[in-house]
Image (cartoon, rainbow, N blue to C red; front, side, top):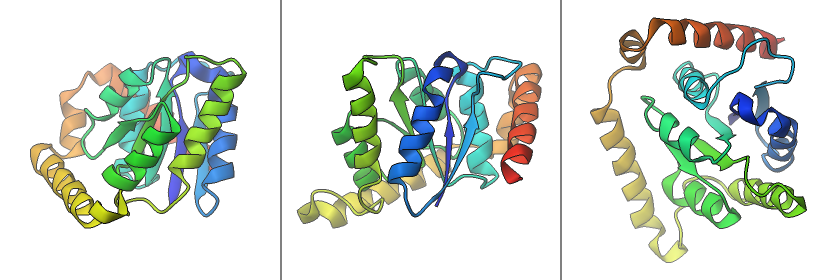
Amino acid sequence: MKIAVVQASTQISKNEMLFEYTKKYAKNSEVTNYGCFADDKENYSYLEIALFIGMLIDSRKADFVVTGCSSGQGMMLACNSMPGVLCGYTPTPKDAYLFARINNGNAVSLPLGEEYTYSGKENLEETLKALFSEPFGGGYPKSEAKRKITDSEKLKHIRRESQIDFREFLNMLDEGMVTKVRRLFERRVKLCSK
């Protein structure tokens, strides 16, 4: 699996920690850090990063994205507004574990601005550990796995049928925002391909 790590500019200080924990627990995956970084010349809102995430998923540069913003809620909502992105809000290890097993989406949003004392870092690490602890989409609990897998596939079908093509979607958005995010996408993909 190709996993991207990217978060809003408001949480640049959490980027390296997010990347390191994702690499640590997504052992059999290719993990790429797309930022945002302290030396970026521009800041990117959670809306712009959600659009970037949509581009990563649509272009197949990433199969799964680990992201977040201050509360995690805004990023989750913005990601779920992107065609082709199914993002869960995972503030705890239990939420992450259940999202990966039951919902089997392609992105998670973490609350990166909350409770970052020692226990905040520990919770983030344990959340990512739980997320990647077993293969995605296996259903949970095991006694209900078949039904849960079927429901997850139905949800994905409903989302595909109710959304427009990503390129068509881009043509409907503010041209300035799309141009800014396309530049980011092109720079980061080029940088991460080296």
